[in-house]
Image 1 (cartoon, rainbow, N blue to C red):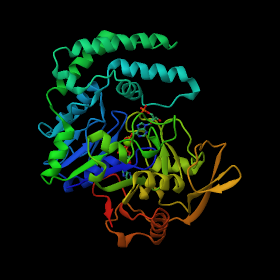
Image 2 (cartoon, rainbow, N blue to C red; image 1 turned 180 degrees about the vertical axis):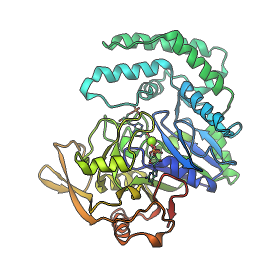
Image 3 (cartoon, rainbow, N blue to C red; image 1 turned 90 degrees about the vertical axis):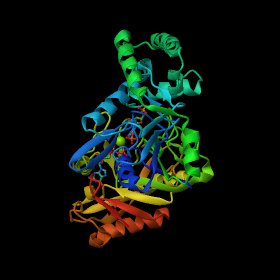
Image 4 (cartoon, rainbow, N blue to C red; image 1 turned 60 degrees about the horizontal axis):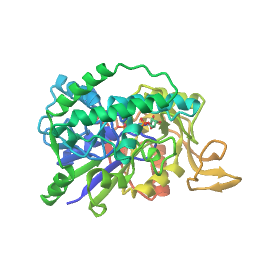
Length: 423
Ligand code: GDP
Ligand code: IMO
Ligand code: MG
């Protein structure tokens, strides 16, 4: 049995949560492989909206098991709030939510260090979600981190204290004013740990490989997007983990030859939240309309998302790096009503036309070259099958399929589970 993989192909918020929820009925296990509470995955069904940050998006289904893999970083404080939200809605997660012992913990001081680092950067800041992601992964690769498995040891508080003391010294290094009450933060952290300990800790790599041997079907859920990948994204304006396909292997302990389908999710246009280059970004009322109609506000921070046309140069790059086998196009409904749609098919770069993503995609280096398409008027949000799609939408889809060489298997026409057209 193999593992299928679902990931975002742009700068995040493509609609991963929605599609994982839709696909969960086909799987026994949903496993998150990287990122942490910087993610915000939105699910809408039965008139309710839920936002998940660390918990895999299969949690609302009765039978599927949900694994938080070793590649994930967990903030016990935020995790506790997520669990309490599920409690409030009477969602049963006991026995269905399993945590890797090798997942790293975000300490309160990691969050402080994130804030200090961003403040010290001034205008050059990354636009981090300030959830402590960068400092936690730095401690992981620096071999200083604390892991979930440490919580089963008697001396975990000593470890916590030693790491916190080190962080406080590091905070003093940044010449910025960050206010905090360490006792309060520690209390909150300990409360979070108690809640976390009510869940089952597992050796997730062994668990997943055994599950495969038993014929169980696994879907790996990504967070962030390919252009936020630490290696292949728009560095340094990226997150601190591998968001691309290879990250699923290291983030779950699943061998590369076990990966079967790679589902690549993209919006019919493009958004980005935080700093960093974005060649097709719009600063006019077209971009404003996309933001308004698409409700483009960050699910984690509430910040408005920057909007722009679909960038096929970047999309093809993401398809290649990930080995995408099936595409899923989200938020097509948001493009209804535009007379003309534009798709970036090449960049002007140093006086030449190029179709690959160069090292540097700052506005002073690349200018997008667009192909234009006729828009459609029809409201897509009530459509349930491919046959009712307007011709100009079909042309738009056909063009993307031809350019990427990958079929678009799902067209999403609204936030609800049901607003999903399977082709
Ligand atoms: P994720 O981080 O990739 O899971 O995506 P987010 O949840 O951060 O952002 C996607 C947003 O678009 C959420 O508000 C979803 O409810 C919403 N959404 C998902 N699919 C569609 C769609 O096809 N149409 C519209 N209009 N909204 C969608
Ligand atoms: P989901 O899973 C969109 C962005 C931040 C910032 C950069 C680094 O919901 O798609 P970090 O907090 O990781 O240090 O921030 O990455 N970012 C996201 N943007 N969706 C996300 O997750 C993101 N997670 C991080 O805005 O630019
Ligand atoms: Mg999101």
